Every structure is written in structure tokens, then in C-alpha cells.
Image 1 (cartoon, each protein chain N blue to C red):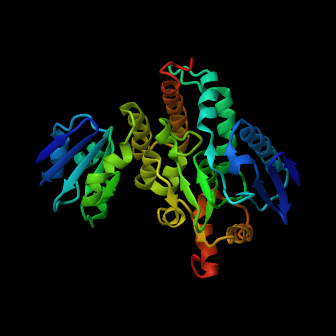
Image 2 (image 1 turned 90 degrees about the horizontal axis):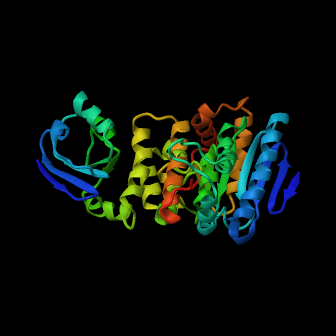
Image 3 (image 1 turned 90 degrees about the vertical axis):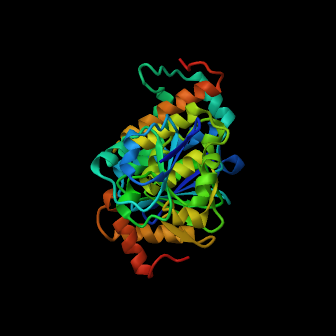
Length: 138
Length: 236
């Protein structure tokens, strides 16, 4: 397994067993990109790891196994893997990325619409406080 | 039925039709929000007392809405009090958000007819509706993230519900504009149609649902499927 980490993105390639992700040093990315090779559907431990991950997960490749696709937030092509981080995160602060990610990872974990609606509101005021000069709105 | 300085609400044979006709292609200024909240309060009251078949929301002109004035939004929020340690949101925000999200709870189908630009908070009116009919050449987007913030009137939560995490994440995080065809392909729009055909589709869908008995939002997709079957599939 090869792991390349930046502040925002961790890329994992040459992964022969998906369960290896659970114990790997992935850092604290906003986005985990996993280059999948031929692999079986993940076991329960790996599913739990990906379901509870505090970052967005993306699988790269032509994945026909729906069970495998479903454990990742995004399924992207090889070409997209190179371009997507720039497209998504250009000119955004880590705080802003984390605030938005928190809503999507909560949705993945099964948060209700009411919970997500409240999360986006609170995140809005935290980010707007920064936009208005870094002070709290309080 | 009533007219409120740029918000025109009519009852066409039991279907409420709200035409937004505010300045700047429905630029969501403080004036826009004031008139929007006023007319939505009227719709909420009407829903309690009359048996409407549905509600259609559209732009009176070429565009649905170009979204919020970010500077005005920034100014307004700086005047509001939010203490993150309590998580209690400003009353003004709660009220404003209610008049977006309550559309989802109305006892009849709400259909947004999306034409031209449907951006930011404008898009949030659409995603809080039960259905979106999109016309060719329309463009939708949630560009808030490109201004350092995020959509907070249902634009994140509802988009996840409508399009799934993968498509919603791209829309919300990238802030990119999406053409009508793609909005339909990713599930943001329920019906894609030609120019000036959106109203007819929205009326047809509401009439179809009305013929099914009382409206149950949980059966949203079933009604849509039934309606499209009567037409022999989506008309593109």
C-alpha cells in the first residue's frame, strides 16, 4: 500500500486488501482517495471504518460491485482523481471544508433531515463570523 | 388572489401559483426576503383553511432567482447574535428558514418551475419544494462555498436528500453551476422540459396527484412515476 498525504487529501494506491485502511496512517484529510484494484466487498470492520470516517471517501476506478461502491461517498474515474481536489477545494479554508464535510459525514452516518438542517445553520454562522472579520457573532 | 410588491399569488382552478417578480431577476435582498416571508405566511395560512391541489413557484420573468446578495447577507448576519456555545440560532434566521423548509411540510405538492438562473438561496426555494421541473437552458447552483460560507436554508440538507451524497457534495462544495440537462441527470430535477413548457408540466403533475387522493410526501417518487407513465416517459 502506498500512501501520499497532503494537508487536504490522502491518496492510497496499490491496496490489495481494503481492510488495510483501518490500521493505516491516513493522517487527517478532508478527502481520502482510494485507488482500488480488484478486491472483494469489504468486511464489516472496514464498512464501519468507512461509515464513521470523519472525512469524505472516494474510490477510484471502474467499480461494478454495488456493495463496494456503496461504502464510499464518491466513486470517481482515474481522470477525476487528479482534478477533483482542486475543483472542490480551491480557495477554501480548511475550516470551511471541515464544516461542510461534517454535514455530509453526518448524513452518511444516518443523521435526520432536521439534524442536518440545524447543522448547516450553525456552520453558516460560524463561517460568517470568520467572513465578518474573525469575530464571533455573539 | 393577492399581490405583495413583486410577489403575485393566484389561485388557478385550485392550484396556487406564486410568481416572483422582484427587482434584479429576483435578487434576494432584504426587500426580497421581507416580501417572500409575507407571501409565504399567507400561503401557510391558506394551506390550513382551503383545499388546494398544489402550489407552483416560479419566476415571473426569465429567471427563477439569481440568489442572495452576499454583501447584504453578510451585513445582516453580523447584526445577529449567535453564541456557538449554546447553539441557539438567531430568531431571524429561524423564521427565515421556516419559510423555506415549511414548503416540504405542506399538505399538497409544491412544484418549482425552474427557468434561467436558479442560484444560491433561489435554488434553496427549489430544493425545499417536493418537485422541480426544469426548463432547457436553465442553470442551477449552490455557489455559497465560493464566498467562504455554505447554503443554510436547506441547500445542503435537502440537496443530499434529493441527489444523494455524491452529487450533493459536488454541488455544495464546488459551488459550480450546472446546466439543466445535468441537473436532471443527477436527480436534482424531476422533469426536464423545453422552454416555456414548465408550467404545463407542473400543472399536469399536480392534477395527476390530485386525482390520486390526499397527498403523502413519502410517496413523492411514486406519484412522479405514475405521472410520467401517463405521458409515456419524461419528455425531453
